[in-house]
Image 1 (cartoon, rainbow, N blue to C red):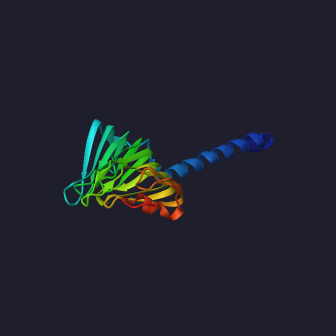
Image 2: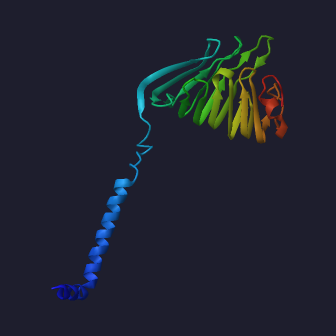
Image 3: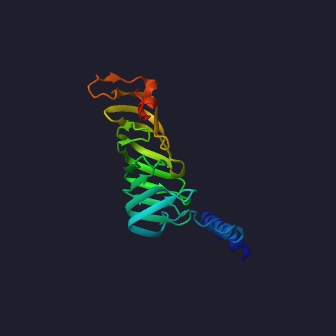
Length: 227
């Protein structure tokens, strides 16, 4: 009987080897499943969910002095779970001036984002800002001013904003273009940083236009100074 079994196994070595390999692989997989760590949960499942949504929303952010630092209005505002930041669709905004005789900066963008403390505002474009003409406390007329760019990072409580993208500044009839911009709205100082070019007009509308020098962007943007 033993001889017949050995003969049978010799005649069927290949099928028997396949069966043994399969059993060994199955046993190894079972042992790995039993001794291995539990599978990790997925860290990210889908997009961040909105904790609530507002339609035709109006948002006012206040500074440390208790005064409004920015007014925001949007047809839709989503507050996200986790960081509790606000996402705005097609927002319009108003940044009040610190001086009583200076009009606010008003603007609009395609998208907006505000962090939970309200200290950081990001706008994606096109982004447009505009300030009306006014007469300051010294009786000097200041022409209207505007900014056009593709994105802006702003600190409303500090009345500061900046962009690394191409930007266009206008003040009255003067027009300046450059790459990168910094602005301090407290003193109405706007500065283009790189590749600055444009045309500056003196206060007299009858004076001929002259090309702007690269270093004159800050002077052109500062109200009351000719480039």
